[in-house]
Amino acid sequence: MKHLLKLQDLSTEEIINILNLADQLKYEKKHGITHHHLKGQSLGMIFQKSSTRTRVSFEVGMYDLGGQALFLSSRDLQIGRGEPVQDTARVLSRYLDGIMIRTFEQKEVEMLAEYGSIPIINGLTDYCHPCQVLADLLTIREHKGLLKGNKLCFIGDGNNMANSLIVGGIKTGMPVSIACPKGFEPDAEIMKWASENGDFTCTDNIEEAAAGADVLYTDVWASMGQEDEAAARRKAFAGYQVGDRALAAANPGCMVLHCLPAHRGEEITDEAFEAHADEIFDEAENRLHAQKAVMVLCMKK
Ligand code: CP
Ligand code: NVA
Image: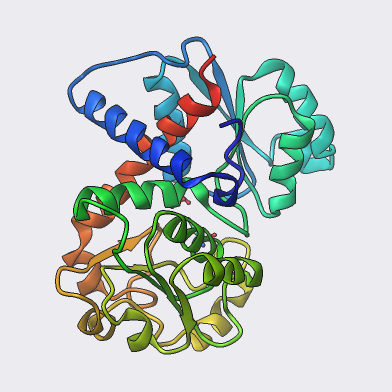
């Protein structure tokens, strides 16, 4: 595996390999076993958007693996003043051993990989969030024992999370359903691919999507960069929530996941969040283990 740009680029086998290594690294960390797989290596972390989990988990992950992470805010980089991505990629490739980038356009991530000569890891774009979904799959597998056959239902905006969950779920044999208001569907090409390659549905009816679900997933109604639309989106998404209605339709023992940050009372009720807090914070923890696996597989020399 050279880069992690989007989950479409990975085979099912590669995804399972990442999850297996993540399990092993998690076990080792819990038992105080250290392996400096990335000894002496440096990861640059470019952030054009805010982050709590992604920043801290990558930084701690690099430390655990014997390397270091550099936090590079786009406010301080010349990229924020218009230096082309193509040039930034070639310069940073001369100093660093890998780059994690969180930005707006997926094209920027793809261009870093095209022009640079080091592994590039996507830490979220408007299009997808592959690191998050690898952690989500790890969490589902831990709690349910297996992925295949467990139905994953996403309720809310057809955003970066929805796009990556569809790809990750279908590639690992999970039936995937989406409930979103009309006009807020996930990426059309991803939905077409999902329908052709697995058990996929998209509807505006919450009960229909949540029926028989083993995992209910949601995310904010307004993503980073959509702050101006927040009020209009609150109207459009009213009721597209993980709460009693969705849980009543789901299977008994259904998990609830949220990539975080969460807005209680909007996409998730406080009751549903707190009742499933253990799953949600396992999911947040698993960012660390899943990303360490990704870094080892992409960067180990
Ligand atoms: N879920 C997630 O990516 O969190 P951050 O925005 O805090 O990194
Ligand atoms: N859809 C959210 C995910 C945050 C982790 C956003 O892009 O802001």
